[in-house]
Length: 232
Image: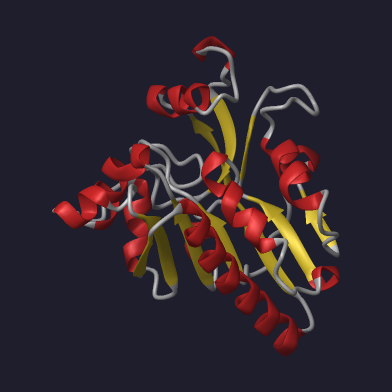
């Protein structure tokens, strides 16, 4: 695992997008197609804004969704599929799109997974203590209180009672099967999770810490999210 630190979320997003574009381009050149897992949430907006500006033959890219709430109405503004439609699919046209609202897909080996880290250290919706052992590609996850509070804090829901308590999430082992992983984590509110996941030991209590063991994972931080990492 590599860690790269930038001055701002915009610079972070541009660097992560450039790496993603290079990985996808290389896969298309070598295999004729590429596969991409897309994360969602406020922390991914700069990344996706920069990604759609990359020179990528999207007609040869298959897009897969990382996670999704259970029980939200179709096209709900907080739906993670809706986030992907707004921030990616309205701007580029991938050859294949597999959203979880259509059912759990059969996954190929993913060329690059775009992920983030939650305020509680979660990876996708694998909240602590995360299951590091299941081989199921997707699981039904119980969302903990801090995860649900984060969704209110980001403005996706009006109050905690509106936030679903379960979600479909790509499992830890499935994420780790990706050839490369790009993890974008801006903002001061993520600083504690960054320190716990990337300075401490690998632990289910800090789910994203598992990225330390991936040979081609890169974590992109800004000055604020890296503040406690640098201080420690």
